[in-house]
Amino acid sequence: MRVLLVRVSFVLGLLAAGLLAGCASATGSPTVPLASYAGILPAPVSASQTPDKRFDLESGSAVYAASSAAAPVADYLAGLLRPATGYAVPVVASAPSAPAIKLTLSGAPTVVGDEGYRLTVDPSGIVLSAQTAAGLFEGVQTLRQLLPSAIESRKAVQGAPWAVPAGTVTDYPRYAYRGASLDVARHFFDVADVERYIDDIARYKMDYLHLHLTDDQGWRIAVDGYPALTQIGASTEVGGGAGGYYTQAQYKEIVGYAASRYITVIPEIDMPGHVNAAESAYGDLTCDGKAPAPYAGTGTGFSTLCTNSPAVKTFVSTVLKQLAALTPGSYIDIGGDEAQATSASDYARFMTWAAAQVRADGKTPMGWDAITNAQTGSGAVAEYWETTDSATPAFKAAVAAGTKVVLAPANRTYLDQKYDQSTVLGLDWAGPIPLAQAYQWDPSTYLPGVPSAAVEGVEAAMWSETLTSVADLEYLAFPRLTAVAELGWSPAATHDLGAFERRLAAQAAHWAEAGIGFFRAPGVDWPRG
Ligand code: NGO
Image: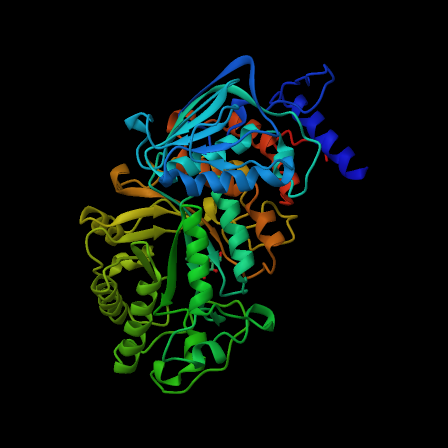
């Protein structure tokens, strides 16, 4: 009963927010409210809703994969629809007689590109078209937002009619890089936790997961030939907990799971600083040859690899080669932040060498903005995390020479920062970061002296000094993750804080059904619940 009341009060709240219109069942009794195209988040390029018409998903409805390339996304969609509806939702390879949801790789306009889609809903059926399976997947995320929020329940619910309002969406991303990072080093998150976070970011059409795999407090990936990295280097975390690591098989599972959501995993091995965990396992990575004790504090900037030593070169090239082999995507991240314990000249020489190793392994180097003090080559990606918008001359020069930029300004996109002074979780060195601050900026003009053409996209960073569970991650991510996702996906012309806040109000009922806890940020007319 309590659950029911909560659900009804959410619905009432959404009605109050003007984002849902009531609809009636075939018997005329008021039932589940109809979603609105105005609630789609991130805002689509264009959407138009047809009044008074809808498609009803019924017990006989199928998902029709018009080609084998569309089949994996059709399976994924059917998997989303089955639990709550309790319907069989078969995936079929030829046109069914009953109204269906058709997924096709033909007929989408060229403008949708590699990741966009067109969605057409009318009473006789739904057609989702794209040029790639990734585009279909992004369209499915839109479709799921147009269903009643009860579709998110993992148990069968009386949500019928499962109505989708009629209309058309044509949509594609503003930026190629729409990332979220996750620090599994300060606190370890197991495979299931990471997969849950992958699903969280997939909802909002993000396409990169940057995994911060190593830091002073923990080394989280097994490396053949260096067993102590996991035996000793993975044995703790902030606060002294048990830590943990991924075997290479588990890491591959994460990469595969992300790929099934059209998300590319970028592994980060942070160096030449942030290396105490590696050094606690192998003392010859330090210049004095002595292994330091494992570290469970939250300090930064105190450790460094002995950058000129042959043992370090052998170690780093081995690690990078194995990671490259585990990585289907093009980027390998070599960190490079806060190397205060490394001299500037050692830093430049070593990071130039490390970037060349990545290239030799057939990948593109990526790192924090300080890597622009090294020569990382054209097409390398520097991630800007500073709290000011004045990039260094070295950064601007690197961009002029072909370095690409991912924007993750700490005072905008760092999800680990508190929302306000009363937030219990999180750090506040770059914050607090209220929702509007996360949303109100334009990546294309953010850095004076950096042309918009150099900006590959944005990233929402989740550092885990204070975070130990998925619930912690979700509380800090929702809703600010969606602000970064919208900056990455939606056309600049749709940027509007008030409209964004109204879109968020429409998402909240979905989060509640999916068990995603969130911060009720001021400014949003959150449904009661
Ligand atoms: C900084 C630092 C990280 C911290 C994080 C906490 C970067 C790139 N280096 O961001 O080690 O975890 O802040 O907010």
